[in-house]
Each structure stands twice: as structure tokens, then as C-alpha cells.
Length: 145
View 1 (cartoon, rainbow, N blue to C red):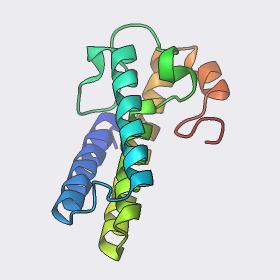
View 2 (cartoon, rainbow, N blue to C red):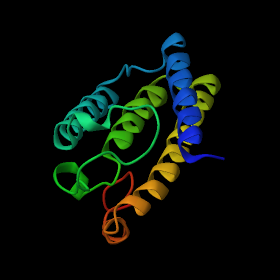
View 3 (cartoon, rainbow, N blue to C red):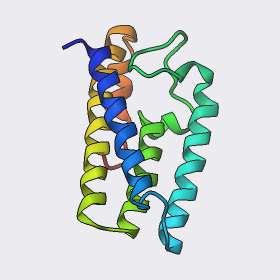
View 4 (cartoon, rainbow, N blue to C red):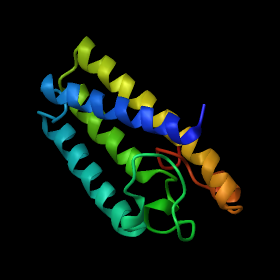
């Protein structure tokens, strides 16, 4: 299947899962630790957006014009925006844990994994330095994964 189409489908699944969590009142945390994680996730997202710039606002995965970004949060994570989204989502879900919210979070996480896989394949094609960058930088959790 086409990588861009796959990433768009994953994006739709992600949006629907997040919408489901909002409807279930499971997206926003209700305890201090989870709220703190969500605040840190928002700050990470803002830092990543400011570092990357406006060029990343599109529904499909794929490299944009410009150089490979390896500064700011991209020094620690290859996908800080996806990381921030998952940290935020899981902090909310774990503070309202139910079978439905867990399943929606799993769908959202799966969608992010699909998008990352598609994006990384396209990044390798566009940026020759991406392979060495990926070898030294974790995907979603600094120093871990």
C-alpha cells in the first residue's frame, strides 16, 4: 500500500480514537501526577513545534522541505510530537482506566506506530543522514526506545 495513504488512514484512526476518549471522558487526567505528565507533554509538543517550524502541518507522513531537524527535543527523540501525544493520551487513559479507554488508547498507539513506520521509510529516502541520526536517537522515550 502507498505509504502516504497508509499514514492518512492511521491519522484518521488516531483522530477517531482521540475523539472516542473525549466522548468517554478519558482523555484529560484527573490526578496530580497524570496532570503533571500531561502538562509536560504539552510543553514537549510546543518545544518540538517551535523547533521544527510550521512546515510539519500535514495529514500524511512524509518529509517536508528543508534540512533534517536534529536540534531541540529532536536531539533526544526522533518523534517528539508523537511522543508528546502518546504521553498525554496515556496519562489521561491511565487515570480513567476502563476496557473501552484502554482499547481506544491501543488503537491510537497503533496508529502512531504505523505513521512512524511510514514516515521513517520516507525520511530514509529523502535524508541520507537519517540512518545515522536514527542509530543514535531513540524514537519515543529518551534513552529507552
